[in-house]
Image (cartoon, rainbow, N blue to C red; front, side, top):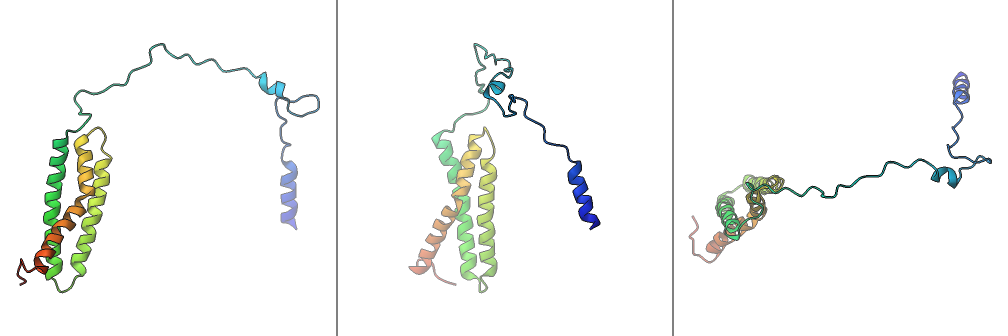
Length: 158
């Protein structure tokens, strides 16, 4: 009971809500009171706004040949990784570790691609991000060639 009396006492001590500033004779807010408020100072726009600045030392685009070179280098490394991982998976009796390493490889390609994509004003890093994101495709293609070699008998099994 004492708790209820204390809560009622706290509620009774609250101040009444304040009336809006723009009220008429009836106590309701009027449009005239809202419109007649003082306006802010007008914003002065300069006649010649600032022009964007391009840094001459930083490349703004990437040549096609340089893009293809970056993608080819990353894909060659990825193809070697794909062949190595498939060979390891094919030769091992317990497939757990090779499959785990493939998962780590895929996650590292994705995370590396996202980190490279966050670098600003570096077109070569953007090309590296694209190449890293598509590196598992190159790994799969190279592993498919090795698989075809095993299936068609071009490569003898050991």
